[in-house]
Length: 243
Image 1 (tube, one colour):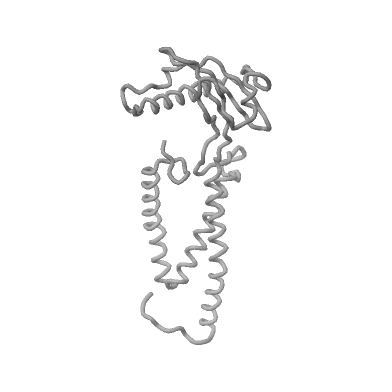
Image 2 (cartoon, one colour; image 1 turned 135 degrees about the horizontal axis):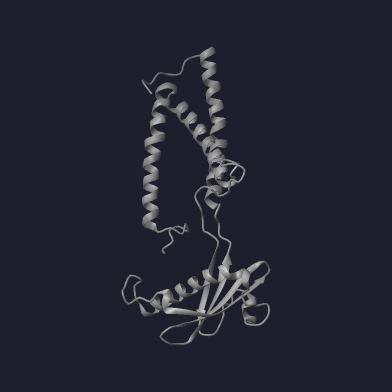
């Protein structure tokens, strides 16, 4: 899948989502701004809107990231937009060599590589699909066959022969051996476990909201003080017509 701007989302989907979000923001937030402008004026209405909006976003994004018992004692975290999920990532497929990204790959199949146990049953099932799908994608790319082409290879055209795990420096690694069912060489696939970045977007929203709140709150305080000075005495500002 094409990744647009590093968001792991197709560019077309990202543009559609951005357009819908922009229209919703203009419709709902813009209507509130019009009402505030009619009552408080353009500048004051803008400041009130931004302080209220950023404050609400702080609460919402904090609830996304940390839960805060919003659904009871067992409230999970990461309730908002999710970043990349934890997953096994293929690094290299070759007919014998392993990846050189980690030193441990060079010692395969010796120590610290181990065969999977009963506790790894779920990972074995997951890795089987990941490895076979990866080999199918690599084969289609080499043969210049589109994924939607009826001749395209799929994961079911490959079979897993062996799988080993290793944990080095807190990093989980795996090496799988597989073959094409219609014959061919034995393929060695090197993989690493990516912890993902599930709370990334919640933290981005939280940080952005805090910055907006910190910028607009002092400006609102200054504007309110000037407004209070005008109401309790002093000269009126120039009249430029309706807001």
